[in-house]
Length: 304
Image (cartoon, rainbow, N blue to C red; front, side, top):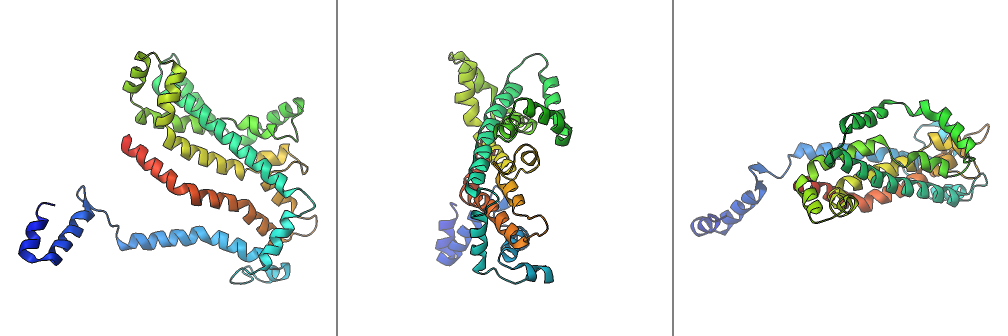
C-alpha cells in the first residue's frame, strides 16, 4: 500500500487506482474474486434448486385435466393458485391452522431440546475426563447405524401403554435428543473451546454447569445454530413417525397434505398447493436466517 502514492506521482492517478484495485483483490496471496465459471456453476445450482418450487407452483395452478394431459400443463402459475390455497386452508378433512400449530410446536420444542442436550453432552465428551468416555461416545455414534424402522414397533407399544397415541408428546418425547447432534457438538467443541477457558472458569470458582452456560454455550453458538436449523427442518417435514402415532384429528402439516388425497381420486393441483404452503415457512426461515447463520459459521471458523 505504501507504493501506491509513488505510482501516482510517477504514472498518474489512473495507474494508482488500478494498482489499488489489484492490491485490494490480493488477500493472503490469492485473488478474492472467483473465476467466471464459478458464477456459471452457482447459477446452474440455483436453477436446479428453484426448479422444484417452480414446478410445484405451476402444477398447483393447473386443473386435473391439464395435468393428466401433460407433465408441464403451463409455463407460468396463474391466479387460480390462490383458489387452491384457499381450498387447502379451508379443507374439511382437517384443521389447517391446527396442523400448522402442531408442526411449529413440535419443531421448536425438539430443536431447542436437541441443541441444549446435545451441547451438554458434547461439552462433557469434549472437555471432561471420566471413565468410559471414549467407549460411550462410540456407542452413541454407533446408534446412528440403527435404522429408525427397527424401533417403531416397541416404541409404538410404549406409546400405547402410556396412552399417548394421537397426542403430540408421542412425537416430541422420542425426538428430544439424537446421536447426530451429540456427535456434531462434540466435534465442534473439541476445536472451538480451549481447555484454558474451562480451567480458568473452574479456578474462578464457577460450577460445572456455570462453566457450561457461560463459556461452552456461547462458544458453541455457530454450531448450535446450524444444528437447530437442521433439526427444525427435519421435524417440520417429518412424516414417517407422526403418520403412525397421530391421527386426522391432530395432524401435522405433512399429514394434512396426505389427507388432501381422496379415496379414488388424487387432485395433484390441490396437493401441490398444500406442499407449497408447507414449504413456505422454511423458505422464509432461510431467507431471514441464512445470512446470520453463514456469518456465525464463518466467525466460529475464524475463532477456532
